[in-house]
Amino acid sequence: MQFRTKSCILAITALAVLSLVLISVTMAAGAITLTPGTQAAGGSVSVAGTGFSATKSVGIGFGSEVAGSDSNMAYSGTGTGPYSGRLSHYPVKPGSFVLTSDTGTGGIVSTYTDRGDATCTWSYDGTVMGTINYTSGVWSRSTTVDVSTIAALYSATYTYYQYNVTATGGVTTDSAGGFTTSITVPAGATNGNYNVTAVDSSGSKGVQSLTVSGVIPEGIPTVLIMLLTATAVIAGSYYFRKRPTIKANAL
Image 1 (cartoon, rainbow, N blue to C red):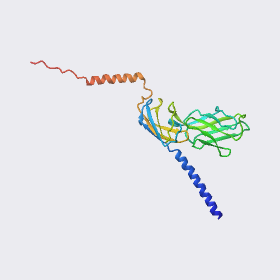
Image 2: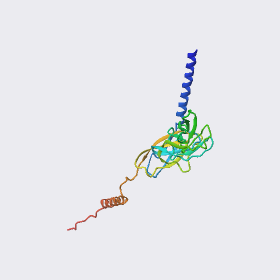
Image 3: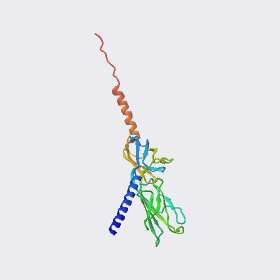
Image 4: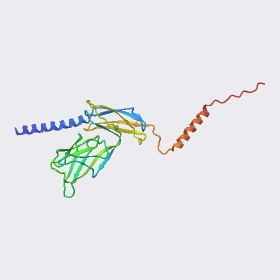
């Protein structure tokens, strides 16, 4: 009987873990479509998203992933919290954020680790005690006691994207988890393929590749480009010009 009870407990535990995994996978099932798929630097691209969380803000990153590290961050809060601040760069890659709270020599150092669903676990006992907004970079953490009289140094590590190309007016998904917006290809993007990543505030993410083409290679002076263009025009005009026909005098 005892063996059966243990087996039943193990089975229930396994099902619970599997359910959490499935929920996590479901939350990250966003997808985006880019129109057009090829664009020059400074050009506009339409981004259509589906499968994101409903009525959530969306941030759009362009280019490669970048390791971020902030220290001695400004924050606000009283009592048991929440205490909150903002990262230097965003949108943030879900699951990459770790916040550290240090009260100094002889004090307590706590970490809050991103779970990929906009919540963080507290290193002290594993409870959910913090949040991270992937779109805006705003973080928060709470405590079990009043720490408003204790100065803390907050630092964080996280992953962001090379360029933040989110529309100035912001982007929000509809009730079905969809959105449509436009981005501008960064002026600093050279010819090549770049990832466009859309992330909503709860951790759903979609990635699509964009080809940047039509950028003039660096190192070629503008005067030289104009000279080469003018030369090509003159040469073309000379080549296609019809030469007059000379007729011999009749004898």
